Length: 242
Figure 1 (tube, rainbow, N blue to C red):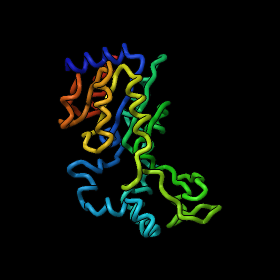
Figure 2 (tube, rainbow, N blue to C red):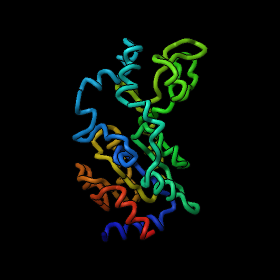
Figure 3 (spheres, rainbow, N blue to C red):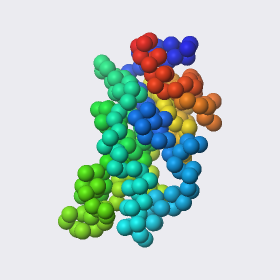
Figure 4 (tube, rainbow, N blue to C red):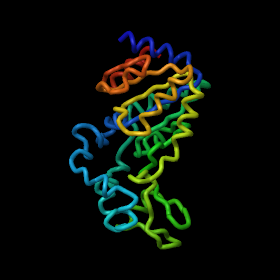
């Protein structure tokens, strides 16, 4: 509880906050944590093979069948931002700058109206034409078994980062951390590289750091404040002190 109170004081005084989020932020919205011990990725490791750029290029039609099933795209529009997403949005109160750097591809930070979002692993909500780079909505993608560009007739590629794709957001994420006075890491086990290298950027500067997660991580030692608690409960406690 002392950590919660002290962290609330840091939040109050911070002018610029960066928030790193993982799957634990969205579980209260009903979205499963794909990489938890009971997550979908552990059920069948071949999912990583099928959710790769190389498989998309080799078998685009079968890729889309598996992609829609694995990511449960039919349900995506039913998911809504939860208390944690709204808490992060509300951090923007006053003139405070808040940047969200998220591993999540569900688009719920955008739905919660957060002003500045770096979608580190892309988004499920849109797909693009590899030829003309036109962008297409989730509704368009769900309107056909294998979505194609309405101009080029080329099979669309999801805007979520696939295995084998290059990370393009890392430098922007590092810059946002360097410009912050407080970094909150919420709902991630920090197992995925290179996202899990971002906390080291905070160590290089004068950035106060805190991690809030429902279980310990291997990176806990890097943080000034460590809170092991269900995120919804932790956020509720923080809100009382704010």
